[in-house]
Structure formats: C-alpha cells, structure tokens
Image (cartoon, rainbow, N blue to C red):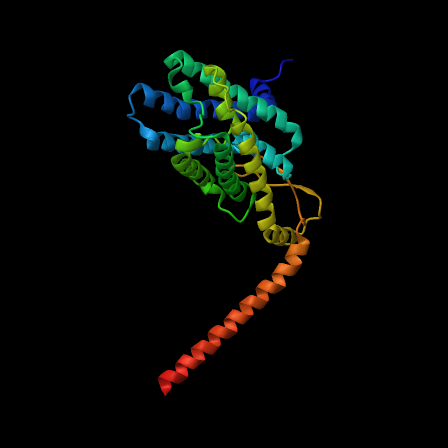
Length: 297
C-alpha cells in the first residue's frame, strides 16, 4: 500500500526542506540585490546607491521572515560556519548548507545574465582601491553583521521577533557606507554567483577570506561577552552541563550549545559588579544627604 501524499511531503520536508529553503533564500538575495545593481546600470542610475543598499537590507529581512523557521535563514556560508564552530549548528549540515547557498546564488545569477546580459558584471563585488583596504573593510563589515546575528539568533535574552529587522538593518547600514569601497559583500555566496555568471574572478579571495575572518571573530567575541547570561540561563533551567537542544526561533533552526563555558568569568564578574553597584548606591545616598543639609541650612 502506498503512503499518503502528506507522509511523503513530510519526509521530503524533514530531509531536504532546510536545504531548499537556503537555496531559495540565496536565489532571492541575488535576484533582488544584484538585480538592483544591474537595473540601476540599465536605467542610468534611477535606483541609486542608496536604493541598492535598501534593496539588500529589505530582501534579507524578508527571507529571514520567510525561511527562518525552516532553515534558520543563514543565506551566507560564513554564518553557517560561525554557528557550527560556536556549537550553535551541527557540523553534519554545513556542507549541504554551503552547497545550497552557492547553487541558489549561481542559479539566479544565470537568470540575471539571460535577462540583462553582462550588465555591470551582474552586480559582482568589485574593488575601488587595493586588496588590503577592501579585505579589512569586508572583515569589519562582516564582524558587525555577525555580532548582531549572534545576539538575536542565539541569545534568549534578545528579542527574536525583531531579528529580521535587526539583521536587515545591519546589512543596509553596511552596504550604505561600505558599498562604494568594497561592494559590501559580507557573503561569499553573493559574490560567487555573479562572478561565475559574468566571468569576473579577480579579487574573489577578498570576498571569501574577509567575511570568514570577520564572522569568526564576531561569533567568538559574542560568546565571550554573553558568558554570564548563559550561566544564569543554565541555572534557571537546571539542566546538566552537556549538549542541549535550543528552542527554535525565527532565526535559528534547532541548534546546539554547551552551558557553563564561562563560569570563571562569571565567578569573578558577578561579585565585582555587585560591589560596584553597592558603592554607587552609597555615593548617591551620601550626595543626596549632603544636598538635603545644604537646602535646610
């Protein structure tokens, strides 16, 4: 007896749904963002640089809302890598996510090539100055982006419902001021797709290595600064110190973390913060008393 169609769809969704969602999200990113660059060129600047930056920010926000609950809406190979190295994503899924993101970006770049020809190199990220300047800028821009992603996607204290707006706004901000210098890629898949379709391979290493460095630095930096909150959360839930499944959120599929990494930092920081707070309260009380005496005199 054959299985009902709903069972087949459920199995397909469970096995391939997240990868297909990542491919569609990358496809849409290139379609809207790089398509805006191509249309701006063919329309003689009617979209403008500001319009292109807004387009990238809006399409990222839209795809997070559309696919975040399915795949986590990474859309970016360095985001997937950073999540995996900080134990927020299983390593077994990393190759599949990378393949889906690259295929989605390359497929839409081919569509843009068929629609517009090789206009503006199909939105390929290009340097305006030297490799070194663009490498540092791409690393910095990706650092800002990944730091925000870590905050809203992995920290329960952050507001998950606003994750799409926070991440999309960061992409918009980075593209607004970094675009004229390096192209503000922050995403190797976004650079790879147009480069493949247009045949523009020069300086591609900048848009691969730069985002990798920035994303990994940001991910581990956030793991350090969030340490005390992670300890409080593990004590509140009273779970053992082992690999725990996190709840799904609008920006993260079921992921993994380890509680209790930063207990030495927490042990030192908590008493110090309490002492500083008590000292500030005493100083405030003394100032208030002195003001009262002056007024009464």
